[in-house]
Length: 372
Image 1 (cartoon, rainbow, N blue to C red):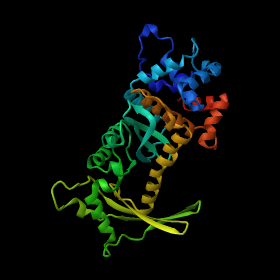
Image 2: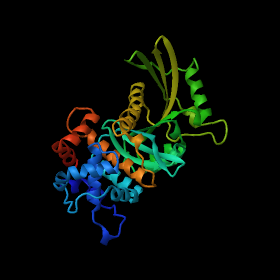
Image 3: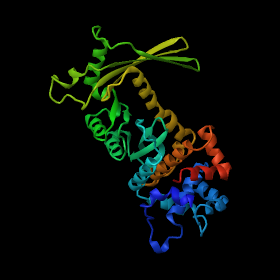
Image 4: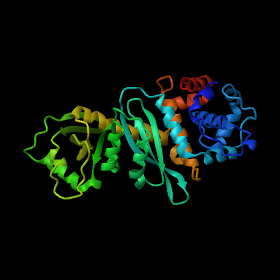
C-alpha cells in the first residue's frame, strides 16, 4: 500500500506501548497525523475529526481496522516517540528525495513560541535547508537559541553533505563547526560578526584599507513596496595573513580558509538611506557572483521555511507542552513541508495545503508521488 511505502523509512520506530494492548498500529497513527497535517489540521482534536471524515480514504492506504484513535491516544503516542530516532528516520527518508548535484545547504534555528519544555524555555529547532530543491534535510531540537553551537555539529553529522556549500549565520561561526563541515566533505560560508569581534574588526579594516584591491563588486538591486536595496559583493582570496603569524595565542584560525567576503547593502526608503556591511569566511574560493547567490539562498530558510511554518502551518500557535510532543510535531511539519513542496502544480504552498484538505485525489497524489 502507498501509505505503508511512504512510512517504510520509519520502520525502526517502535510504538511506546505494551504490544498486547496496541489497538492502533503505529504506521496508522503516523499516516493519520501526517495526512491530517498536510490537509490543514493543527491539533490532535482536529486530526481526529479529519480522520473520522476521511476514514474511507485512509483505509485505501492502510487497514485502520479499529477506526480512528481518540485525540488523547494520538497525543500520548506522539509524545512518547523517541524524537532523536524519529528525526534520524526523517533524514534517511529525505535522502531519497534529494538530487545528486551538490546544493547550498542553509543552517538556521527557529523558536516555536508556545511550544514550551516545562515552563522556562520554548522549543528551538535548528534546521538544514537545501536551497535549490527547497527541502528540509534534517533538524535538531534544543531548549534555547544559545545552544545552537552545540546543536549544529550534531545536525551536520547526520547529513550527507559531500560537495555542498553550507551557510550559517554568525552564531555558527566557530572553528569546530567549520571543521565538522569540512569533515563531511562540504565547504562553509560563515557570517562573521560580534561573536568573533576581534576577527571581524580585522576583516573590516582589511576591506577598508585603500591599498587593498578586491576587484570589481558584483551588484544586485531589489525594489518592492517603496523600498530599493542595492547590494554590492566583494571577495578576497588574500587570507594568508589570517592563517599564519597571528599576533596572540588562541586567536581563532579557521581550517581550510580560502576567502573572506563583504556584502554592503544600501537601502532607500521614504527618502532615508541606510547602509549595512556584513562579512563572511569561506573555505571555497568563491567569486562575488557566487557569494551573492549563496547569501540570497541562505535567506531562503527564513522566507521559504520559517515563514511558511509560521504563516501556512501556524507553528507559533502550537500548544504542545510535553518533552517529546513539540519535537516530534516539528519533524512531522517538516515532513509535510517537503511533501507540499514536491506536490504537483504551481499554486502557492498555502493553496496546495488547502487543496490537499479539499481533494482526496490530490492528497493521494502527494502521498503516492513520494512513496518510492
